[in-house]
Length: 178
Image (tube, rainbow, N blue to C red; front, side):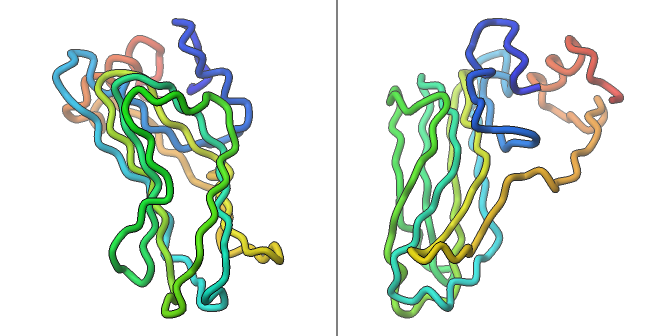
């Protein structure tokens, strides 16, 4: 459905994403332009106890359409304070089909980490993610997620409480009760 590009908005250009992808899409969230979508996708707690003081590399495939939206990638160690790994200010050209690579050093005390992607948008465009991986220099994998094993649920009007944009989209595209 994400690649359904009826209005020429270039969603189909996210060819690095395949199968199930994660999407925060404020364009379909509020069609009346009165709201702002605040969305966060976070990993589960990742065991990095063997990575103390090592450099780790976070990679993910990303599709971002600029406009009045903002995003950032943050990490927290052992449920502590968040550190910004990547900041995407409003209006910033970021890329419709890119692989992002972010490197960071693991503090000596850290035993776990949680990575989060924050998105804020106002009835405009999206941020889509796929193929998230966290590795060290020896290519040891600490986290690997392509979302393809996630069981998707059916969309129904009863479940879309208050979400006028998605309910309208589902109704107009024959998705209710699917």
